Amino acid sequence: MPRHYDPDSMPPIEDTKDSVFPIYLPLQVFDNDEFDCRTPEEWMSLGLEPGSSDRKPVPGKALLPTDDVLGHDDPKSQELIYKWIDVGVLDYDKETDLYLVHKTDEKGLVRDEEGRPIINGGRTPEGRAPLLPCQYWVPRVCLQFLAEDPQVFAERVACADSLRKRTQGLLMYHLYVDCMPTEGLDTINEKSLQRVKRLAVQTPKMKDEKSMLDQISTLEKEVKLDYKHTMNMISFDRVVASKPEMFSFVTLPDKEQKEAPEKGRGHSEAVCFLVFDRIRGLL
Image (cartoon, rainbow, N blue to C red; front, side):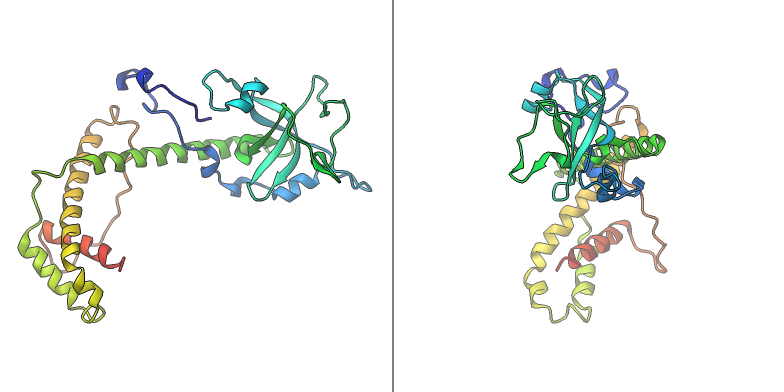
């Protein structure tokens, strides 16, 4: 659960084995519903008994705060303790992709404030009443139905958490590279740049493309900037690879294997072609 954090109390890199920075991306964004053996509608239909139109709560466990007052007021508070708690699943919202859960009482029952069983998700002809303190809307990755395989659900949560950490590491990587200075770096060879520009505008599709000719100077600046950015990426990759423990919170992008060209090019010219092709594809 992403929490509020104090930037002044962050531990130094040497004192942590995990990410130096707190997790701020919601876990449900990285959830993979292919782990699910039923659709949301099928899960909710488990609360229906043969011959009855009243849908009862579906048993499950949800990751919820133990303090219901603070849990609703500030769910990201550092003071909150989250645990897997027995719940009854009352309803599903297709628009938000969230499930409404209700904490069970001491007897393991789902009851409203007056001690009456809750059926049909608490909906009445007048609509649904405001949430009780013990009720929460939760994503699927934070809800395990008792009718599903717990090992599969644990793998689902682990995969989502692993993908979230990798994504945050990639975001950190690109942020660092974008913030690296470009002053004083070697610029692209002017002869190579002019050759690439000439070949690019002489292609059949670009010969008569007025917008390309009007923006050629802007594209040249973009190519030069991307060239310096690529040089920074190469330098940063080398540093991160040489000190993996220090940069454990940074994820290096996967390297794409490219076939060698039939005719060789200089390094600066090859980079220039790649950058120009990428920019040209955006027009």
